[in-house]
Every structure is written in C-alpha cells, then in structure tokens.
Amino acid sequence: MAKTTLPTDLHITYQLQYRKCGKPTCGTCKRGPGHGPYWYAYWREGNKLRSGYIGKAQPVGASAAAVARAEARVATRRAPRYS
Ligand SMILES: [Zn+2]
Image (cartoon, rainbow, N blue to C red):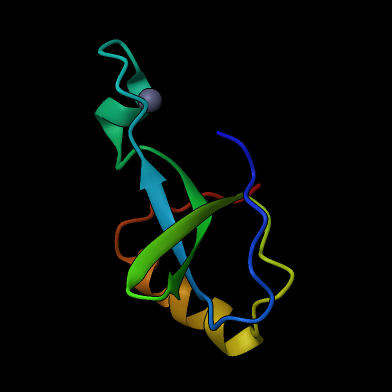
C-alpha cells in the first residue's frame, strides 16, 4: 500500500490497526489479529471521511496524547512483542 500525503490544515485522527492479508496460508493472520499494528490517519474533507496509510512508524504530526490514545485502544488486541 502506498503512503498517503496527509493534509496539514485539517484535524487528523490517528489510529493503530491490524490488517489481514487475506492469504489462506498466512500463519500471522491465523494466530493473531493480523499484520501490524500499522498507523492510519483519518480526517474529514467536507462530509467525506478520508483515510491514509502511514505505516509502522509513529506519525510525525501526532501529539503524544494522540499516540497514547491510539496505543491504548489497540493494546487489548495486541499480542506482546518486544523487538
Ligand atoms: Zn497475513
């Protein structure tokens, strides 16, 4: 998936999400919630909800509070991993 250019003049909500790759033989998806978590950005353009893929790295524009909120939301579904 390609990285998205995020708007700089709109309020962006950041979320951490897992993604299933859809391969029936994928052990990662079978054992857990999928691949990731990856960062996604959500924002509104007019009355349209837009989203953009950021990737594994924490978004540069996100505040510490926004990062903490996103991590708290995804924590219950994340298997412990220390790398
Ligand atoms: Zn997979």
